Amino acid sequence: MSTSWDSQWIARAVLIIAVVFASVWMLWHLLPALAWACVLAIATWPLRQGLARRGIGNTAVATLLTLVLAVVLVLPLIGLGIEAAREGDAIVQWVRDIRQNGLGTPEWLPRLPYLGNTVAVWWQANLAEPEAARALFGRAETSGIFTLTRRLGIEVASRLTLLVFTLLALFFLYRDGPSVMEGARSVARRLFGRPGESLGQNAVAAVRGTVNGLVLVGLVEGVLLGIAYVATGLPHAALLGLATGALATVPFGASLVFVVCALVLLVQSQTTAAIALLVFGSLVVFVADHFVRPILIGSSTHLPFLWVLLGIFGGLETFGLIGLFLGPAIMSVVIAMWREGAA
Image 1 (cartoon, rainbow, N blue to C red):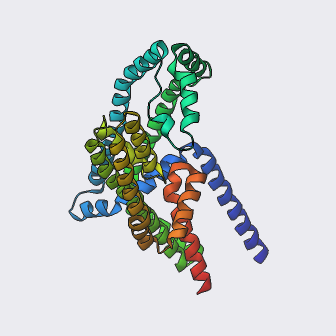
Image 2 (cartoon, rainbow, N blue to C red):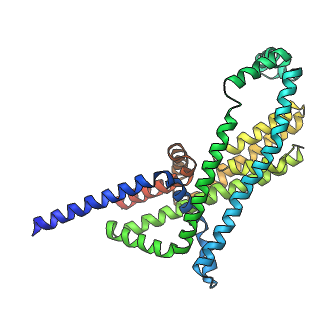
Image 3 (spheres, helix red, strand yellow):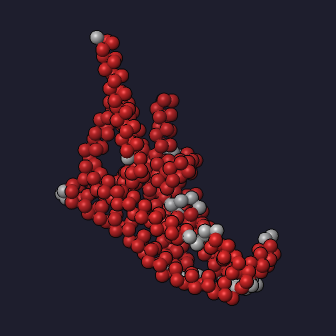
């Protein structure tokens, strides 16, 4: 009897593993969309519950929130595409002008410390004279730099497909989320006992705290630096603010944008504005990264901020952009298991 029960248990375990493996293999290319849908659902779940308590049906709530998030996610992409198309002709004309007339060396360039003279010599040899500029941009064309625009269309189509599946999965998570969560709790209790449910709750709290700490703080950084772009007279300040807010979710992303903007101002001989933008941007990023984000993320995950940073950087390196949110969730589960074992 015991042998028969053991063989049935082994066969059942093998079947479960095989089915799970086959499911993961079949859905491998859609897993990022499912992961993004889970992150968005977890981050906005309090809003979903608030609407449900007002008597709105599950399908209506799911439809409303999915449409709102679709608009929030798609409109900035459309705006970036339109702006890129508008600027494309200007960039092409600018490149043609440089190839025709060259680009003179800025007067301030040799005065830069350390690398100023070296950069000025390179600029004079490769950009100042029309023939040299034509040769430089000719090498760029033959090396394939300009042909990257062809790949851009493929990447955009891939991202749009991912976005469609994300929104589709998000709709069903909003609609059937309570039953899915109850099923997950039951499975966790059967497999891991009572600690299994608490581990899931820690992971959910980590994702929500990371979204608040990265996305919301990043949007505030984008608004503040967007105001700075307007004040310094940069063109397309709203678009630059949007790019700053989006890249602020990635470590050092916001710094990259405002440093490039400061360099543009420096090239235009607006030294005071460039220095002011660098100082203000550095202050905003320093306060956000060293004070605001540790409080928001650490209070939700109950993790020291060092482990939060390890989760963010490790997740970003391993899983890409979605790893920004998966990394801290995984670290919170690991630390919770450690504390459970040490208790």
